[in-house]
Image (cartoon, rainbow, N blue to C red):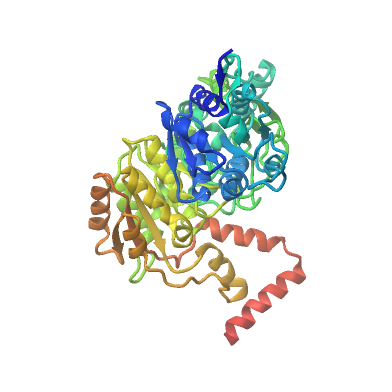
Length: 579
């Protein structure tokens, strides 16, 4: 048998499962792994400024790349630094491989450097965690980690390689070749037939699509047309249905949704939910009415009936189930064309009205968000990639940023970690060198991870980062303003953003009002096309809240007992009067 090391076998296995990049920082427990990565012709190791950023980059690589995102970490501290990105992948259902070094497993001494039980640390943050005990274990372990990460509800999986196994060669048989997991089976035909009949018999069907439906995009378009049904999306699935399609109604439904989505879904008598879990953000803090005649499609059986009862639950891959439903309904919905025509006119009218209301809002000497989105929209192509962060700008983008054509959009959602957008934008640019990358980020989030732009500069990545600069943690500041008449710890000290841009090798453009908007946007994208990151400091106007923000505040306030409502309202009035 040939003699080899765990590091060598690990890299070979990562190549087999399609990893193209790793993100992390080398240390004493993974230098052998990095040496093997350096020799790989298929994998590029990317040095990050912090594993915190690396976790978000691996998450984003899985969302927009052709392979699974992969971390290459030192044990303990590297893992905990990356925990936010790993947690984001876990709660959002994103596959990820987390490859860490480990302390020696053959020594007699305790209290080793970084000695911590990572398998225990990984509980709750990963779908599974493995520790290699022999060199020969490694290829099969990584193959299995990949299968777990990418099947069922996707998520991160940890593989720990003790440093002695990386360094010391052992006899090991040639590894078994990687065998992908079989595709998830279709639900029984009788269930598919019944689901189709529910949708066909409805007078007002609606489609609700999330991240899990992204690989069924073209068939979803045909299905919506076949049923004459409007389409609303979750936040994570906001790009799952093209916004320039006449039946696209918008993000969310219910009280927190924009008028086009709220009114298109109002009074529906059947709903097809595909790859959507009815989570807190997606439902406007659970403010929706329970859907009637719900047909719920999801890869995870635990999702069905968890928050809202389903008439029919179809467990499986949306990419297979949606075409099966389409086959059953095509040509059978008698009033679909008439219904679609009426809906399209109503949706277009409400979308235009909402945008006009935003554009005519007096933003004073600051930049109107809708005007900024329009200016960027006019400058970029129909296949650009968009990353956003956690904050007020996220919901404004979900409501106002048009995802025409094949534009993509990724956002932290259920874990909702601040700092996501800039590292995610870098990963998107790495995954698709020929496509434009636009990042919208709040100034609070930008302070967390903006320094990672030094990596973008070093790699010659031309992404444009629009920093929504208002000097506050706006989403929470707005939530504090009404009930407390205070902004506790949400007003930030002034930061010289131009110095951060200069320190990271980025160009800086500042937009202070409407007069220089179009020219500044054009210059930003011209510079980015030359292969350099550009930071656009936008003095944004947040004086008008998103409909989503207004809706969730009202929804949550309604849930309080009457005594607490009176107490909160009384406090707000008293502080308003007294200051």
